[in-house]
Structures are given as structure tokens and as C-alpha cells.
Amino acid sequence: MEEELLSAVPCSSLAVDSVIRVATAGGLYGFCAGPRDARKIGLSGVSQASHVAKSIGRYGFQCGIVSGVFTMTHCGLQRYRGKNDWVNALVGGAVAGAAVAIGTRNWTHVVATAGLVSAFSVLANCTKADLKQL
Image (tube, rainbow, N blue to C red; front, side, top):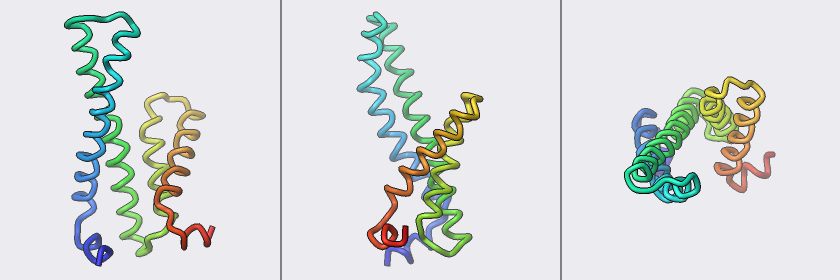
């Protein structure tokens, strides 16, 4: 039943839902990490509040981008290939990791991040049947 529901929902809708959920989680992380970072560098008052607000936006945006790119790639491949297996997660994770790391302009960092996110994506999306195939 879930497969029928997922095939009826457009990939763009799934990506927007994913971005909203994960960007919110990233923003909450920024809300928790921002004050600690601000104290670490010696900020207080308005400058600390500004730093926290920027942290919320930065973490929320970065997490949302990763989620959106992964979901759109994973869903698009699933629809194109007609299969829901670990290859979709592998490619989706690699594209999402590369999209985040491309800002460094260091190809070693881009490849390493793409590989790391790809590996975590495959492990997160694996079922027992998928693990037997590997």
C-alpha cells in the first residue's frame, strides 16, 4: 500500500516535504549550537543573538539542501529505473554529498564527502533483504 502511495505522489512534493522536515531539524540544531559557539568566541548581547540567528539559518539551509537533493535524486531514479533498491540510495547520497561539498572547490573533499554521504544513505535505506544481496 505504501508503494502505491509513493508512486502517486510527485517527486517534487516528496522533496519539499523532506526539505521542510530536515531544515527544521537543522534549524533546531543551529539554535542549540549557536549560543555555545557564540560564547566560545566571546560574543554577548546583540552580537550573540545575531550569531545565533545566522547559525539557525545556516544549519537549516544546509540540511534542507542535502535533504532536497537526496530525495529528488532518489525518487527520480526510483521512478526511472522502476526499482526500489540500494543503488538509488547510493547515487542519491553521492549527488547530495557532492552538492554540499562543491562549495569547497577541493575535489578531494568533494569525492570524500560524496562517498561518505553515499555510504550512510545506503546503510540508512537498507532492509534485511538488501543486506543479504550485498
